[in-house]
Length: 188
Image (cartoon, rainbow, N blue to C red; front, side):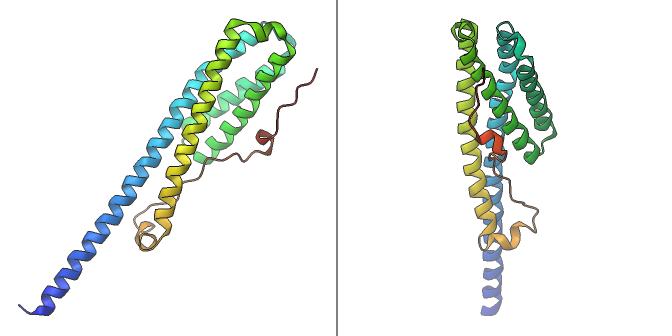
């Protein structure tokens, strides 16, 4: 056997090792993104479960604020539907709308001192605030993993084979609704 054969064989083996390594790295990062998305889904499910209890508690105090309460329930239902569909862009928009409407419920507590002092409301508000904090942390975790995956997919040499193997960029979870970035207006 000639030296050329061993050189070509070594190059082929090296190429195969590099391709396997690149593929495994993409799979590892893809799984981290999926895990982060799943963590976010768990926290959002918790929020979906808390919202009806919060709305029921507020209903007794703020009967003439029915429109605000209905908006919260509608936003919750839309977010749940978007979550079930699995479309990341729709889910991001629906979750941003829900976050925005939840701010209005907390603003209502400023208008109703009895509600603000109600133990059930305070506990639900604490739970929802805790959940919102966990959602924010899970979004940061998700976005960090998306950044790592997308970067890996875009740099050389992974960019050459990544798209051919069917890997696509993941969208970042970001606030796209300008209204969600605004502070809640409390009107009496």
